[in-house]
Amino acid sequence: MAAPKNPDTGSPSRFLGELLRCSPGPAILIDRDGTIVGANGLAVELLARPARELEGRSISSLLPDRVQQVWSSFLARWLSRPKDRPLGETLNLWACRADLTEVPIAVSLRPWPQDGPTHVVAWLHDATRERRTEEALRASEERFRIAAMHTADVIQEAHFEDDELELFSDVDKLMGYPPGGFPRTVTGWFEIVHPEDRDRVRDEMNKFAESGAGKWEVTYRMRAGDGSYRYWLDRGTVTKLGEDGQFVKGVGAARDITERVIRERELREALVELEAAKTRLTSENVYLQEELLEDLDYEDIVGDSETFRRTLAQVRLVSELDATVLLQGETGTGKELLARAVHASSKRKERPLIKVNCSALPSTLIESELFGHEKGAFTGAAEPRMGRFELADQGTLFLDEIAEIPLELQAKLLQVLQDGEFERLGSSRTLKTDVRIIAATNRDLRRAVDEGRFRGDLYYRLAVFPIEVPPLRARKSDIRPLALYFLSRHNAKHGRSVDEIPETTMATLEAYDWPGNVRELENVIERGSILSTGKTLTIDATTLIRPSGAGSAPVADAAARGKRSTRPSGSGTLEDMERAHIFATLESCGWKVKGRGHAAERLGLNEATLRSRMKKLGIKRP
Image (cartoon, rainbow, N blue to C red):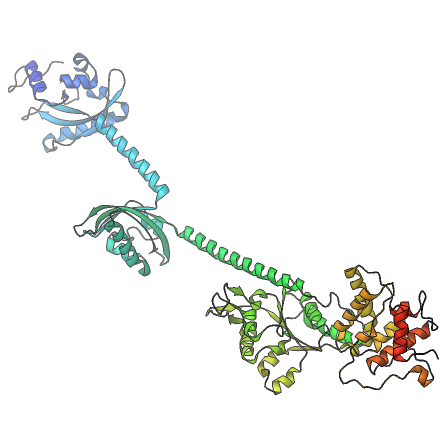
C-alpha cells in the first residue's frame, strides 16, 4: 500500500525520512482502518520484523489475541475525537515479534496531518525495563507483605510534625473498629494507648532517639473497639529527627502480643503456685521428719471397756463432720491418738494432720510456729517460713496442750478460727487458710476462763464438740489387752521373745492406779521386756509410782496377819506393794525360790537378789 502524499511534506519517501528524523523512538504510520503505511527503523528494530513485512498489514496482527480487543476499542475511541485526546495518554500492550516472543510496549497516538488528518502516527515505547521494574516492585511488595504478615500485625509510618499516621494493614478489622475507625493521626493513636502507658511510651521513644540508636522497641496496651485493652510490641526506626532532637518521622512494625502476655502471666502464676507447692511440700517434709523423730505413743487404738467404747462412739460421730473438736483428759490418756483417728476418718484425710505442741514451744516462738514469718521479722529469721496454719490448709491442725497458748496470742488464734485469715510475722499481707481444728488439753479450761487465764470466746469456739478421754484407772478392763499389745510391739522393736505375762504380774498391773495413764503402762511394759531374760515378762514393781494423794494404808504382811494374799492391795506404799507381789509369787510357786519356772525366774531376779529382797521386806514362809 502506497503512502499518501501531503502538501506540506511532499512524497511518501520524503515523509518517512522526515518521520525518522523527528521521532525520538519507534513510530508507525497507520490509516484510519489500522493498516500500517510505514515504519521507522526503530520500530522495525523493536518489532524485529522487516519494513516490507510491516507495510500493508493490520497493526492488530502484531498484537496477541488477548489484547486485540483492547487495542481496537482504544483506536476507535481516539478516532472519534482525536483532537480532544491529551498527548500523554498511552495504552500498555504487548507486541509479537517475528520469533513469536512478546515485548511490552506503550502506545500513544497523534493525528497526521494536523489539519484534516487522514492517518495516525502511533508512537511506540519499549516498556520492557518499566515492566521489569514494575514486576520487581510487585515481587518486592509481595515479599514485604508476606514478611510483614509473619513479623508484624501493623506497619505504620508516623509523621509527628503533620500529626499523620499512615497504616499499611487492615488494623480496623484487627482491633475490632468499623472501617476507618482506627485513628489515622498520631494524637488519636496516643489517645487509645492505655493512660498508664502513654507518658512511658513517649519518654522511651525519645530516649531511643536522643541516644542516637535510631531504633525503638516499646510495649504498651492499646484500646480495642470493644473497650478492652490489648498488649502490643512496637519496633521501629527513626527516619527523621528535628533540630531539637525530637521525633519527626518514623516507621514501626507492631505486633499483638496479648496471647503471649496472657500465657506468660499464667506461666508466672503457675510458677508461683508451683513454688508455693514446693515450699509447702518442703515444709511438710521437714514437719514429717520431725514427727518421725518423735516417739509417738501409739499406732492403734486398743480398748474395749464400756467407758472407752463411749469415747470411741463420740469420735466416730464427729469424724465425718467438719466441727472443731476439744479433747479433754489427763496426760498420757491417748488424746493425740484419738485426734489422728478423727482426722483419718474425715474428708480431709488426704491432706496432712499438722501437730503443734503448744507447751513445748517458748512463748516468743509459738506465734511464728503457728502463723509463719517473713525474712527479717525478728532476730534469727534469715529466711521466710510457712506456719502450721499454712501447712494444714485443707487439712487438720492439732493444737495439743491448747491451754498453754499465751493470752496475748489467743486473740489472733480466735481471728483465724472465725475468719480463716491471718498474717505472717513481719508481713501485712493477709493469707487465707481452711483448716479443721482439733485441740487437746489436760487442764480445766472452764476454770482457766473463770480465772482470766483463757479467753472465754476462744473456749466456746474450741468446745464445739468436747470429748472427755477417760484415764486408765477408769477403764481397768483395758489394761490386759493394752499390756499384751505393748509387749508384742516392743518385742518386735527390741528383737525380744517375751510372750507371757504371769497372772500375778497382770494382777499387779490391774491393781495400780496409773497416774501416767496409758503412756506409763507402755513404758513399764517396754522396760519389762528389756529386762526379762526368758519368755515370761518380769516387771520391777519399784518402778511403779504411787499416785499423788493416794491412801497410805499399808498392805499387811501376810505372815503377820496369819493369812495369805494372792493379790496386792490397790493402795499403800510401794514397799507394801512390792512385798505383796513377791509374797504372792512365792505362794504360787510353793515357796520354791530357785529352779525353772519358780519365783526367782518369774520375778526376773537371781536367787541371791530375791533372798536379799525377802530379808529386807521381812517376807518369811508361813
